[in-house]
Image (cartoon, rainbow, N blue to C red; front, top):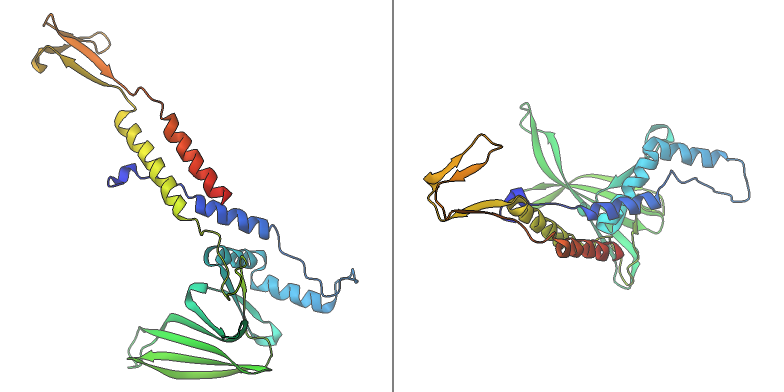
Length: 271
């Protein structure tokens, strides 16, 4: 509403995402490489340690949150010293994926964009802001190339090239909710505009209550100067014999408005 004091934000969108994430990741998933073996193998322990090092259940929860909001999850594997690989949850808003026109499951490359703070090239103290791009391109059936570029003017200048000698790309991606015939998945909030309707009704109710929750007193048959307060519980007296005082108050308890608010929330959660 135009008067910001009346605005109410009922964040049912966040409730949907939080409940989805809690359902998907109530705790850190266990890793089983061999379903027939009850004891934890060295490889299973290694994977469990890497996931715990990268963030464990919090990392997986953040992946589910990105999927709920964006529809697509992107995760990067970064080699570290001593075979201690990092697992990084990427922002899907910064990534574009290109796939084979004949088969969207056949990924050709991922393109990442971000803004970086880098040392000034003139040697002076401080940092410059640089626009960066990185292409993770399939070089062959068994390897990928990681090409990093920096924006200079209207051109991209390559600053680094790193090989990735594995058939699986260093960036893994999957759909949050299935969407047929397309690479990108579906997010949780395709009906998010209903949240705006919920906020509007809640704000209308608050505005009505702010102006009309307390009764207003008005009088007739006298001038304002004739109204005199007494010492008896704030009682007013008027000398004019035909003077009248009334209280104007709401005759409705806003039941229909509250029912509409409940109905909109019910529709939101049902969808």
